[in-house]
Structures are given as C-alpha cells and as structure tokens.
Image (tube, rainbow, N blue to C red; front, top):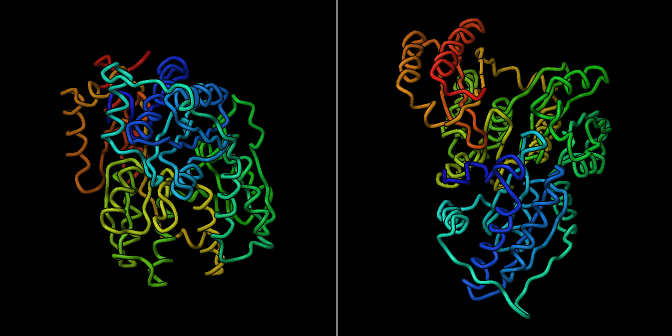
Amino acid sequence: MGKYFGTDGFRGEANKNLTFEHAIQIGRFLGWYYGEKMGKKAKVVIGKDTRRSSYMFEYALCTGLMASGADAYIMHVTTTPSVAYITRTDDFDCGIMISASHNPYYDNGIKLLNGKGEKMEEETLLEVEKYIDGEIEVPVAERDKIGRTVDYVSGRNRYIGYLISMSKYSFKGVKVGLDVANGAAWQIAKGVFDALGAKTYVMNDSPDGYNINTDCGSTHIEHLQKFVVDNGLDIGFAYDGDADRCLCVDEKGNVVTGDHIIYIYGLYMKERGKLLNNKVVTTKMSNFGLYKALEKVDIGAEKTDVGDKYVYENMVQYGHRIGGEQSGHIIFSKYATTGDGILTSLKMMEVMLAKEKPMSELAAPVVFYPQVLENVRVKSKPAAKNDPDVQAEVKKVEEALGSNGRILLRESGTEPVIRVMVEADTDEICRKYVDQVVDVINKKGHTVE
C-alpha cells in the first residue's frame, strides 16, 4: 500500500483526509498520464455512490481531467462493478469510482481502475501519489485541447442489460428481499429482479446523502433477516454502499456469508465440470468451517491476504473461476473483474433454481467455527500491529489455541483500524483471547480516544 492509496482506493473523511484538492490532482494526473503523455486525448468514465460529498468529488475529478485535456464520461449514481464493466467494454483508458464502500456517509473514497476494469496497477498509483506530493509536474491543456464532460447514463443502462442477460432462469414466483443500503444499487437492483420476474421487496431505498450504510445493508444484516421472515420471503440479498459485495439471508432468516457463497457456487461449478483447477480462492479471514466443507466434496482452496484485490490477482495468475471474501466480495472471473453484489445474488438464484433447493439446504454443509472479530481504531496501524508487547500477546494466544483455533491480527486496508480475530471451539474462548490482545493495544496507548 502507498501513502494515500490502500487496498481499495484513496479513502478518508471527506475534506479532512480526502479533500476536493486531492480529487482535482488525481484528475489532473490521470488526464495527462492517459492523454498527452500517450500522445492522444484520454477518455475516462466516472461513477459515484449516494454520499453527499460524492457530487463534490465528481466535479473536482472532472475539473482536473478536463484541465489536463481528458474527456470525462459521467455515469452518475451507479455501482463499482458497473464502472469496471463499462471501462473494459467501452474502451475507456481508465475508470474512477467515488465511494467509501461500507463506510459511513462522512467518509468517501476514490477507486481507480485500469482500462481492463481491474484495480489500478501499483506502479501507476505510486506515480499519482508523487504528483499529489509535488514531485511531478503536469502541464495544463489549452485552447482546443481542453477536455469536456459527457453524460453517460447509457453506460449504466447497458450494465443493467448485461446483468439481466446473466440469468439462465425466470425468477417468476420467487419472493426476493433486497436491502440496497441507501446506496449505489438503489436504482439498479430492483429493476434487474423485476425484469427477471421476481416478486421483489425492497428496503433502504431512499438515499438522502447521509443515510448510506446507516443501520442497513450488508454491515447490518439483522434487519434483512427480520424482513425476510416477517414477509415470508424465499431469499434476501444485502449490498453495501457501492454494491461490490453481497450477503444472503435464507428463507429461515439465517445469514449466508461470502464463505457459504463460495462453497455453494464452487460445488455447483464442480458438479457441472466448470470448476477449473478444482479450486476456489479464499482469504485468511475465511472460516475453518468452509475448508472442512470443501474437503468433504474434494475441492481445493487457495488462501490470499485479505482484500478482493489479492483474490483477483491469484485468480488471474492461476486461472481460477471463483473466489472472494467472507464479507461478501465474490468474484466470478468469467463475468467480472471485481466483486459484484448484484451478479452474486443472480448466481445464488441460479443455483437455487437449478437444484430446486432452498438456500438453507444449499448452505447447510458449511458449519462455522465460532469467531469473534473486533475492530480497534488506532493512531498508527503499523505501530500498533508491530508493537513487541502486542506481538508477544498474539504469540501467547496462538500457543494456547494450538490446533483448536487461530488468531489473526491485521491492518485494515481502508480505515485507521486494527482487526483482531479469533476462531475457537466456543464464543467464550474467542471473546477471552480477543479481549486479551485488545487490552494490550489499549494499555500501550495505540487506541484513539
């Protein structure tokens, strides 16, 4: 990770850690880098979520791009995967998504995608950071070389058509609940399910600029659980703010995580002879229960660092077809270059309809080990993680758990947070060991008061 860009873009509180000046600078650099530096006029496509600050960042990015001679194509409120799709299919030099994903409304982020719709290469991000820090000069465009903006809502509409074309089955008669998190999926998800014939029930679809992710969506799945049960629905899907992740709720109100989804679709692919290399891709955060379930059906698993960026890199390198994170970032490499929450929900519908089984039965083989995860806000992630006393406490927990569990201490790629996770035989054991490590982090003065 660089100085500004983490595993999922440049993220921070709007006009505090991430400012409109940063957005102008990023636009200025990209407009020049993909334009005059390459001897042409750059074409860049931009999408945003529903945060109030997303409008400010959208215009700031456009200002920077046009000042460097690029044309900025604006998709308006749309999802991260839609920007990735349009970038690669409509021959754009790069794509930009303005979103802080599952973070609260006052945060925002700028995610950069290369011309293939993949997360921007590290080398290019480092060049952007050099420009932000004044180490590189970029000329302004003049006269007929100044760029323009183009309304590109048609791109979003083509993406919706693409999603609809992904379904092999009619959803007629299926009652589906959608929690769109007052975010980027609010105008897209229902339209897709309605077009496929589902009886669609939607919640949290009234964004006001401030309520994105607030007590809703994939980070507050308990509300969808109740919604599904109260309305007698067959299944529910919850997205995050930019809809690149999806969690499910079965007909009984049970949560179906990203780990369950990887198992369900991985097995479905294996049964049809479509699981290349007979492997799925997971991260270090995946639960022991997933691996035990995969072993029983003779499916192998790769393990990467946490972050869909690393999952995708592994999939591309080794040719794997499905991978993702427990949090619901699921990548279907045949169809997308990034996690796509709506596509994930369509794939889960496909398995249900193909096997004629309820989601509860499909997910049942994955029995989770108890897991406790605590996010600790800290002054410095590296200082907290690498503190000798913190490391010593982690080692003590590892020795105490032995082969009956594990502890994972890692830095968030998007927030000033250290994540402490323990898996063990019981919730009580997990809680005990998480508290021990958090207590040391607190006592050493690393936490934010």
